[in-house]
Image (cartoon, rainbow, N blue to C red; front, side):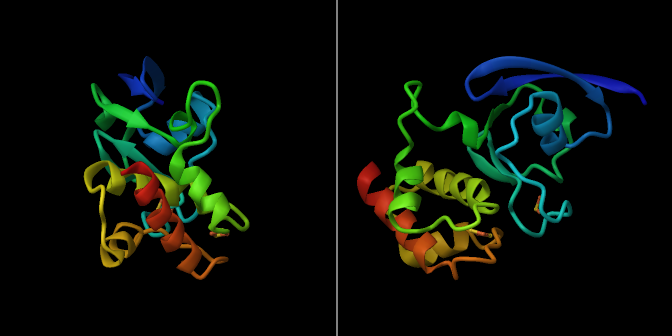
Length: 157
Ligand code: FES
Ligand code: FES
């Protein structure tokens, strides 16, 4: 398989990956960089489990060709806690509001929430719901997740 060399910023660090040209960003993150926080659920852009942030926007990494990441800034769930391990306020809010059950959707949910709160410090409930409209959760019923994002917004103000 023909390979491609892709250089980008990953959680603040410059990186280069040499991977098959057909690989997605998700496959590259999980199998080349061994960052397994972003999950593969559907693999076709429906569930949001694979959500990461590219240049400030939440994207479905399963659909994102890795070569499109050239020169961009990619952030994953592994990159949002403090260097000393202190959880990001969104992570803390998910824990405190029972926004995590099985956890499969959680990294994608948190990255969608982070993309929203980085751009909008005082979101209305409908804006929160819209921001996670592409993220499916089979466990929580979403109420706790919305409450968690509302709490995180207050904490981050
Ligand atoms: S795995 Fe990417 S949207 Fe479902
Ligand atoms: S916590 Fe299980 S899918 Fe959301």
